[in-house]
Every structure is written in structure tokens, then in C-alpha cells.
Image (cartoon, rainbow over the protein chains, first blue to last red):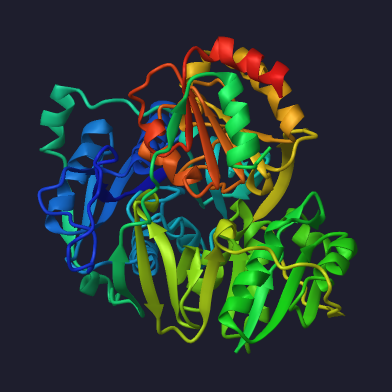
Length: 249
Length: 308
């Protein structure tokens, strides 16, 4: 079985973001970029399925600017066999990305597609579900466990209030939640080897997909700052303040 | 304008989130219908009909909608969405699971986690873990939106909408329900609780989370956790408060042994009053806390419990 794994280049999760002075967007100039953490979990899951003998090939794909090839090389260093870069400098939103991925699914015919449940820049949590709808394949979102069993996959999902397990026919789309696995770090020899692995470059036009969206960004602002309050010296003082000052007890 | 709200269910009953989503629909303006889809959901439909501002409740009561699996729910919404200008759901794990499917099948974008309405086509939503708020305008003919419930005060009861059965039954041979393990708890639901007490890595282990129980009992609080505590395996993920977990905005939030990573703050910084208990007086959590208490949580928690 072939596994397609989608990755996204985003701001490093440790970076504190700044809003541009003209409020047009978030300032990403000279900011450290990295693979979206949920995508790292997706790559790890795909590679583990290959190590277990469930998958025979892992193909990584991304949609983004030229620099996004760094994240594909990371995926290759972590164990993906080859990569597809759909290059665009436009702001590709979930729907456009899902349409492009649907074309790749049509071409590659994977048995399983694994994506992160959300990217930590736009926090949309949409692409996997949209891809499932467009390809007509079943979806297992927010996965904390993925068990392939013949022509089915059981996905345990993190839902409000607990866990839900569903069975999906293959091929299927899975999106990853935090506890699915702990991603490994790439080893130096693997990073060197990754440079020689095949990486195809395509454009949205190759797939006949229009990237532009009907949603426009009007402005971006910093949220209202919350001011720190006071330190209290004891439990008694805390209870007193909560009762008499904040009036929440 | 006419708006369809997908009702959230919790164990077959109407979840509190729906009253917040109806409030968001009222802020947009227009006729508001609520869709209750599931199996054995007549009671939930009756509850939805009482929500203020709802004109019609549409009930799809069929085994294929049991557990609100994504594939049949998406297909049902595609059938019903015609004639509406907006389809809304809460940004719960169900809303997030289903609404992007409707959007994709209608070839429109979806807006996630909307926490403010400027007009019928312009909305506010958090990006970068809530460290920036984007104003976005949608020119799509159908607007498909998930609502961050903490952004809208729930509508009250007092309505008397008509209830109408939906006969649409879709096929689903691709996905099936296997099992559910829901945390059995008498405590309020994390998303809707008036008081939340959360533990972080400073709790040391899962066993020590019991120290929060007595306080939660006395305050009628829900118990949450930071991602660090979840990652460390102390507690299950459904307790996680933060960018990748639950977003809460209670009257009182008590953070215990939580340093205050950006990702955690994203989930609780709209709480009315924040209390932080931490042994490190430099912890970033103190920068957002109204009341900070520096000290050993293993001494403070028992004392707090006994004195409340």
C-alpha cells in the first residue's frame, strides 16, 4: 500500500508572532519556519506503517512557495521515499490545497492519506475533511490511533468528552492529533541521503486548479492584551480577593 | 438572509454549545433554522425549538445519522443547504469534522472558529493560536462557518419554533461506528463550566491530579490540563485546554503548576478572572493572571480545599 502524506511549511511553533504595522497580515520576515507539528506526526505515522510492513511506499506532498522544499526534504529525511512540490507563491487556502491534493490522490492512488489535523498558522482544521469530501473517500479525523486491518482501517478519534473509534473502508483519509505518536528526529546520514531522493516540482496550473479564494483578509490585529494582576501572599488573601474583590466565589 | 444551524448533541441531548451558535446566527441576522440530526433525537429537537430566535427546527432522525459520522452528515447538509445563505455549527469536534465537507462539496471556503460578526459577510477569527485576530470577508454565495462558542453569549429559552421532520436519508457504506469511550464524570463540561481548574506539568504525575478533585467539587468546577500534562501522559487529551485542545472562557480559571506557554494561553486567556499557582515566580502565566500565588502547589492545594 502506498501512503500519501501532506505537509505544510509554517512559522516555528516557538516563535512569538508580530502583527505588521499596517495590519495587513502577520510579519513573517526573517522568522524561523518549520514543518507544522501535526504534519510531523503525520509523516511519523506513515513511516511507522512502512516500517511495520503495512505500507510499501511513502510519498510526501506540499503546496507552497519554493522554500517549502525544505519541509519536503525533512519529510524525506524522516523516511518518506519521494516528494511532490506543488509550487505557488499565492496564499493557498484549505479548499485550494484540498483540490490540489485530490488531483494528486487521483494520480497516485494511495491506500491511505495522512495529514495533520490543523496547521498552526491559520488554525483552520479543514484540509483533510475537504480532501475526503472531494475524493469521496471516508475520513478519520483527530486520530490518536490508526490500525490498518486488511481492507479496513480502524481510527480512534479524539472527540469532545473522550474517544471514538470508527472503521473506514480503504482507501481513506486520516488526520492526526497530538497523541498519535512522538515524531523522531532526522539523523544526519538520513538528512544527507534525503538530498538525493526524488522531488517532483509541479504547479497548480499543471493540475488545472485555481488557487485564488473568495475569502479576503481585511486586516489583522493583535488581540486585546491582558494585563497581569497582583501577587497574593497566602491562600487566605487569595480567597479574600476572589470573594470580595473579583466576586467570583 | 436565512441561516441553518447544525445542533451539537451530547449523548443524544442538545449540547449547550448550540445556544451560543444561535446567538452568532442572531448577530448575522435573518431567519434561523436549526438542524438536529442523529438517532433518537426528538428530545434534543424539542429543546432546540425553545431556543430564542429559532423559527424552525428540522429533525433528521435516522440510524444513518447516529453518532453524527462525517460522511452521512456531510451528505445530509449538502442536500439541505440550498436556500440558505449561511450554515453554522459550533467549533466542536463534530462541527469541525462535518462542515469542511459541506463547504468542499459546495465549492466554497469555510471559516473556522469565528468569534465575532461584523456583518453578514465579514467575520473575526483567531489565527496563530489567538495571537492575532483576522478580519475576513467572504464573497462566497454560501457561507459555511464554525463558531467559537466563547465569543457569543448563549441565547435563552423562551422561543417556540415549529418542528419539522426531514425525510432525507443518505447511504453510508464507507464508515461505521465501533465504540466510544466517554469520560464518565459528574462535573460540568469543560467548554461550558463557570469555573475551571487546570493542572500542568508541575502536578508531577497523573495521580496528583486528585489534589484538584476536592477543590473542583467545592467550586462546581470542570478540571482541565495543559498540553504539557497531556503530553507527559498525566491525563487524557479531552482535558486539554489550549490551541490544540478546548477553548474555555469561564468566570474563574485556576491554573495550577502551569507555566503559561502561548499555546495554553490561547485556550484560556478570555476567562474573566485568572488565578495562577506556581512555584516559579517568573512563570509567564503570572503575566496574564489577575491573582498569582507563588509557592508549592502540594501545600497550597490542600490548604485551599480546606478553606473554601
